[in-house]
Length: 233
Image 1 (cartoon, rainbow, N blue to C red):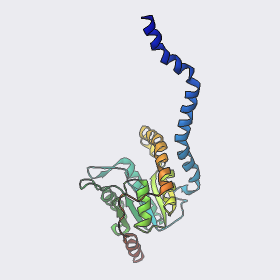
Image 2: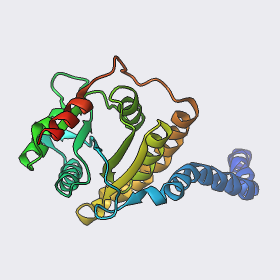
Image 3: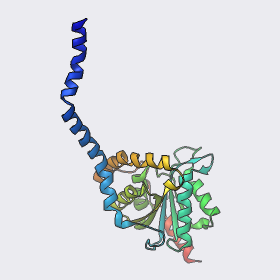
Image 4: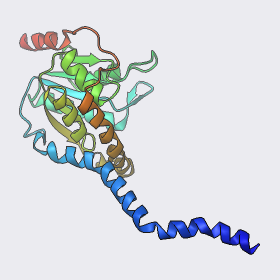
């Protein structure tokens, strides 16, 4: 019995002796995980601003954030309200809403359009991207499919550094205006800030390789048509 107890304690003794190097390895791993998000936050600081101070441009781009039973999630509602506010301020002329429509029973961009129309944005000023499955795809498609060269990005504060980084890497002169979701959901916001760390690591892959979006297809004239409609009024 004494021998068995001695054998059982050996792994614990080994771990105890190695606690210092293991602690260092854990710290380095955490640092490596946090570093990309910290870099994106710092690097995009000059491009993230308020609705009052953001430079006016032609296109505002709103990222999807979930819809249930034909209704936008609370975070998506706030993004859409912010986009409508930018439109009313004259900061943008056209809104590109980008989200998930990978299933027949899930149409995020149409939900976003309907909400914006209810907020007073004219329907012809809203362009839908049905294949914005993640941030990189939304940015790459905005540039390659819709021909967006400059845009104001609209999302939550926790997502804004990554969105600005990826859209600028895709070739868009991007500025960002964010919603502070901690005003109405502190717990979820804290979780999403933590989740940005691994998401930023994945974004490094997109920055390095510029992968082809899941769906690409031919150029679409939606933005140009919406700008022409804006010019007629």
